Structure formats: C-alpha cells, structure tokens
Image (tube, rainbow, N blue to C red; front, side, top):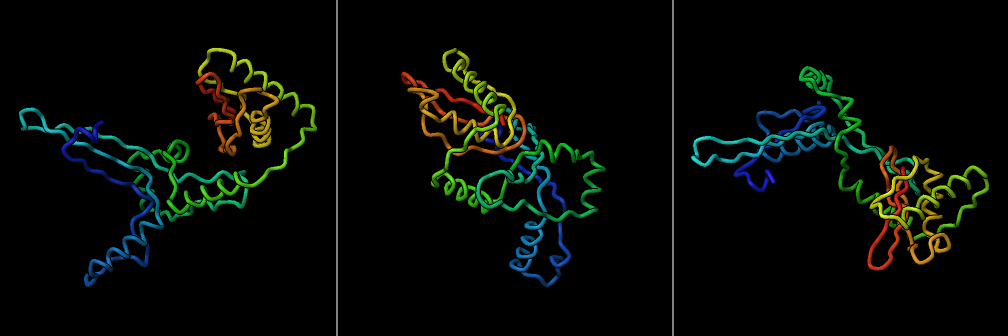
Length: 232
C-alpha cells in the first residue's frame, strides 16, 4: 500500500562487504569497467538488510511523510533431505570491517540468520524446480512400515485427519515429524483406501525443518477442498 500511494521511494542495502581486493575502482575506469568490478563484488557478498522509505506529500505540499520499513534478509540454505542430488548451499564473503560496523549499529546477527526473509538466486530456484519436477515424474516404490511405533504414529495421524475432515475446523496442525515420518504421511494420506472419495494424488513432500506445517494431502468433497497439513 505504501508503494502504491507514494510519489517516490528510496531503498538502501546493508551487506557483508563492499569491495573485493580485485574490484577496486581506478581513476581511468570507464563505465563498463566500473560495472564489471561492482558486479564482481556484489556477487560475492550478500545483502543482510533491506531498507525502504516511501514518501508522500502532505495536502498543502509543504511537507513530506515518510513510511520506512526494513527487513533482515538471509540466503535460504537448501533442505538436505530433499530427494535427488544435493543442491549446494550459498557461500559468500564477509568483510570484518563491514561486520564490525553492523555490530556497532546494533545489528542483530542471530535475528538475521534465524528470522531473516529467505531468498535464493534465480539459478538456484531453477535448479530446485527442475529437481522437484524430476522427482515428481519418477515412479516411487511404496515404503513398507515395519516398526510398530511407526505404524502406531501414522495410525494416529490418519485418525486426526479423518476427525478433521468430518469436523468444521479450517486447518489442522499435526505433531512435529522427522523426514521419515513426513514420507509416511505423504504416502498414507494420499491412499484412496485411507480416505475413500477424498484422496487425490499428492504433490511431492517438502522437507523444511522447524514447526511450520506443509501440505501432505489434498481432498475435495461437494465443491469444497480440504487439505491435510503434516507438521514438518
């Protein structure tokens, strides 16, 4: 909304560094030389914080109102338990002077890593999409549930989902699970035998860590859709 309403905006970036040793500008550099050097530096450091200010004139035109926002930004590391070959994590340079400056300005490094807005480069995104697409297209052999505690765990999950489907709650948060349990959820929630008239072919499971809920199965009945969420 602030961007839609403003007359102009300005943004500023904090980074882990500014210039690499081989990318120092010189007096005789032309525009192409400078761009090449700046690009080299920018590609090896990463953005740590994004600041945005949106300016709107007052009704009398004598003053301006600024709405300012800032967010920590952290390159999302790929989940290590995704199927297929591992996607390399983001590696970047850090300049001690730049980090010291950020610290002097009360930059919260823990918040940057733990709560920073995740992002990835376009080529990394394309690699993940290709990997997921390939995995979805491959036939997967059904895994056998042999351990009694695994069977008991998935039976409890199925009962929770059945109760949820027959109730009025808009969403369901299942118990926190590991990667093996998520695979069992993905497999069992998509079986027609477990949810007659509801189950549809599930999408490939996600394997992000933490307590967020990811889609584990989709169901449709009488024009409405119900999604069973498996905690990751």
